[in-house]
Length: 213
Figure 1 (cartoon, rainbow, N blue to C red):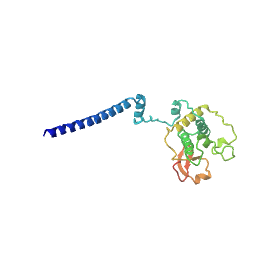
Figure 2: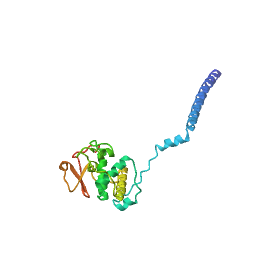
Figure 3: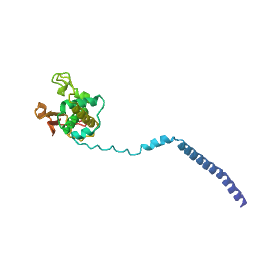
Figure 4: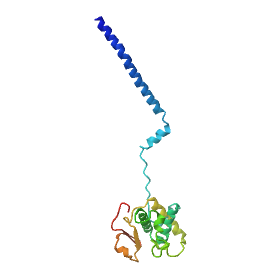
């Protein structure tokens, strides 16, 4: 009996150090992990958390398509493409209603998005310029110098251009890429689909639409 007790005690003595060593290794590993986490820069950790923080939705802009609303807006400014659009609106639509000016701006922006036209505002507006009767916007090839004689009108259409580029206006023309005044009827108007009538203009788009227009 005593022999069995001695053998059992020896086995226990052999197993306990092994378990103790395993426990110590586990504790050391846990400590190293905790140290590594604590060594993370606090700024980087906060930046990491920002990835999962929902972004605040932009504040909606309420537009009143009136001269009074435009006059309350800050002076518009921007790059060369903004200036191209403002110029086009001045010569193409300054006599239109404010809603009509936004509609013309929308057509130009729709062309930028279409694969059938250049992919920039200045490119769209100046397409065909220099070739007689082939320009897309008459004022760019009528031989007359572009001069803004009506300063107040230019300031307003510039604000329309800024708002249109910023995407704060509602869609009005259902993807139109063409328009003409009610006083004329170009041949293409019998081919394209009419989408809207706003002010003195009638708006059209191609008979089929793609993902880009």
